Image (cartoon, rainbow, N blue to C red):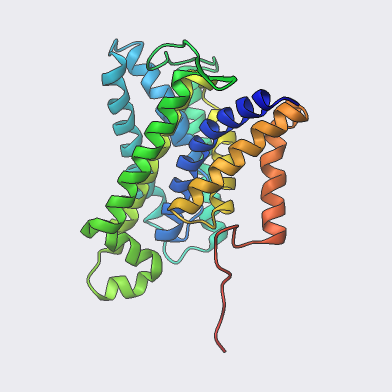
Length: 293
């Protein structure tokens, strides 16, 4: 196996892993704020791509205008989902929450199929499709967009959670919701903010990956599950650990598909997930929970 091929697979895996990282951070933000594993997160990825196509197609908006509109509608959908599916619950059990988020995922996927059909479609590349040579490998400009946008979003995410009042309040809710409520933090509002942020990040991930992988009503299922794998690898952290987890997953998936067989591409993510859950349930970068007696 030549070095050029390894480099090619690695570069492709890094861009794919960046998408998984964005989706995984969305999972982690909601989990840390609410304790909920939102299995509808992948559908916001789907909504980002499909809504952008809708605004560019029937509504004839240019790409630069369609993207913020799609992110806005996806964010509003996340707010509606939290307000009418999650908030009304009183002392829900974990299985109740899992069933509700899965039900929300099925509902959004079904509505998308009715609205836009089953056809697979693609967004135009942001800046052409002329490959760029790096060493002995090539990379498409869209891969650079993916990596760049991911880094910008992660930086904004870091600034928000560590340097704003609402971001610090959300972190307080992640540590202890009851204590946060006792000091005057509106916990329900923080939960809504977590859904807003995660749905917006999911939509952005769906938009920037659509020129490469195309989009359809059902693309969110697999992307959501792989984002969940990235979050598990990172220990359900909304920071750098999940980013590293997504990049590791993307690179291993790309190398496995290239060196072994492309037929195992999707299976690799779940094999890694099972190994992590068996060997280190708290994730590669998480700390094991300890209980004082």
